[in-house]
Length: 442
Ligand code: ASP
Image (cartoon, rainbow, N blue to C red; front, side):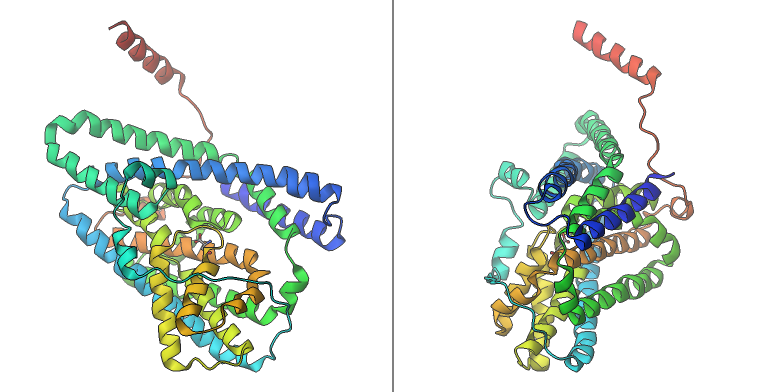
């Protein structure tokens, strides 16, 4: 069995176990199952795995970006990769939310308003655009790295890469070192991914066991419209964009993106999925690191198609509950605000709700309304994060293809870049030990 198959089986088993716990009620609060299995074992295994992936994000992005800048061949290319990916990220997000609002506005008014009890929710105001722009530059590099601020890390790493290029020949051995570190980090991704089946099982069993299924039924209109819009964007819009702009096969793409989607789904975080997305687009789809090292972490931060869709549907839904008519200009503001809000916010679990509150403040919808959908957000967060990550990979492939940085033989080869058995080659292990001893002896 390949790792992908194992992970998919684990996902299925996790859902079955979670549902069993949920439906039979054996996991009620305070019970043994709740305390030691769901809140104990599943929680610990899942959390350890997410933390391990998060641990990889900053060094991986740092080394792969510097290696990417050094390997790009022509620095001017950086500008065109940056502009193209930014443009496409904004475009896909805007299309995503426009379709979502369109669909929701047609379907939702036909259903009576729900009676779900609202949970208190306090919102947040959107930061001014000036702040979003200023915050791209780190005040303090150590702080940027310590807090994992993706845009700041990208900014500094690219600048360092360019500065190394300016050093020229003297930087050769360092460039080789960075390349080696990048490869080592990718191996670390393989190591962490090899335990994924257990972790995915634990993450899903816990999430499903804790789902409020009755709440899900009460909010069925919202949930169904949202999921339909997400699937439409995933299989329709995004695949159309991939085919139109790159000519690549959507079918092959969908087979290969599965790992990244499952990871995004189980963790509900585009940021934590960066290592897997980066691995998928470079090793499985043949995108050169010089493009992917930039577009993937950039996309995880600024591109959130799935989240934008949720904002569109949620706005229509809650406006309907409160009987507010936003009108065309209101909806246009929602589109603009959602696109802007996605730029400054990181891809971490539940951030979509915070963005939604920014949108609500802007268009004058009651922020407490978000309390209505709070209870079902966890599941929807998982689905929309998979869409977010798929969008990042689509744009990465399109930009790479247009820059002639995509190896199509890798893309079409079904088996390219599958995670193999982890092994350390004995001969190279000995050879390296010898080198180290020699250096130590002077
Ligand atoms: N969890 C999402 C992500 O990481 C963001 C959100 O929609 O809450 O991409």
